[in-house]
Length: 116
Image (cartoon, rainbow, N blue to C red; front, side):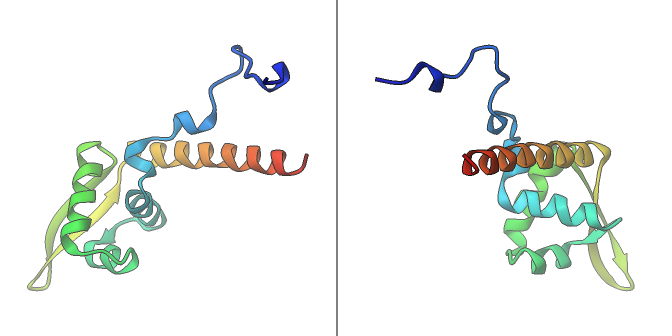
């Protein structure tokens, strides 16, 4: 039999995990957004190396983020070599900040529970 004290109160806000964004939370996409946040503009090859991905895999993840409006992908040239640069959009910056806030809430809950 469960203790009524262990039953969630219906007036409580939902668990922080319910607010995690599936587009942002995926490991590779979270890495892309984080690296793009750290730099004004990041080159495709740098992301591929840092995240240990194939070009095709990185392209797929960038497509998801671009469709969601979280990054802007710009193709151009550096000398004679084709380059692709990724920039975090305002919506991407907001989505990343919200994801980090949810993760901090989860960490706080775990740390509070461990202290009991």
